[in-house]
Amino acid sequence: MASPHFLYALLLLQFSVVLAKDIHISPATAPVPSHDNLSPSPPPSPPPKVAVQGVVYCKSCKYVGKDTLQDAAPLVGAKVKLQCGYIKETAKTDENGYFFFMPPNLTLFKTHKCKVFLLSSPIRGCNAATNLQDGARGATPVLSSETPSLVLFNVGPFAFEPRRKCH
Image (tube, rainbow, N blue to C red; front, top):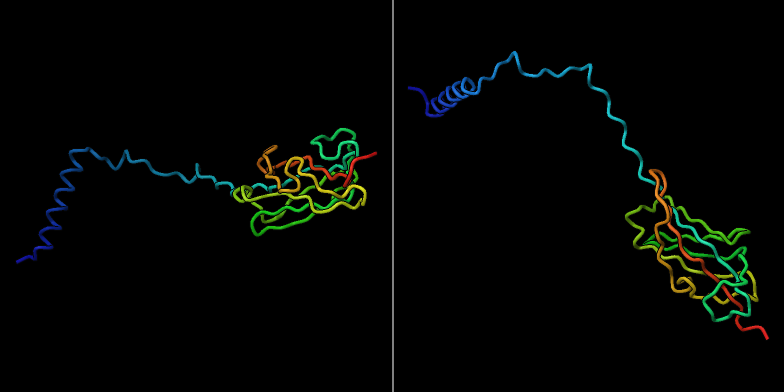
């Protein structure tokens, strides 16, 4: 006498054959994959680099305490800090007051944690950090442009000013 498992398997096989005849599956019409049409998929593209840029100015003594850049000049050598969670970098401005950060481990996902701060000015007569565009408090970068290889954020413009007004 056959075991119940054997009988169940036999019954299942018979049911499959009957079902296949009702559906009219023909081995001749089944698609056969062709190796000629298979092309290797391109490697995944690397994630885009993320950068933050801005400009720092020295305000005129006429406009101390006012949120304006009238008569301001680009500040060469000002120190600025980028902080994104555990990522911390400093940069100095160039002859145009421009600074640029592109930390290798900064991703688009982490940019919501970023702040950029004014740190110091090399000019003694223009070394009071202002909060113009949140430079002293810490500015959140704003998306400027995006390509497949680079996502660029802007902050500022920032400014330092003299400690007191002109006479």
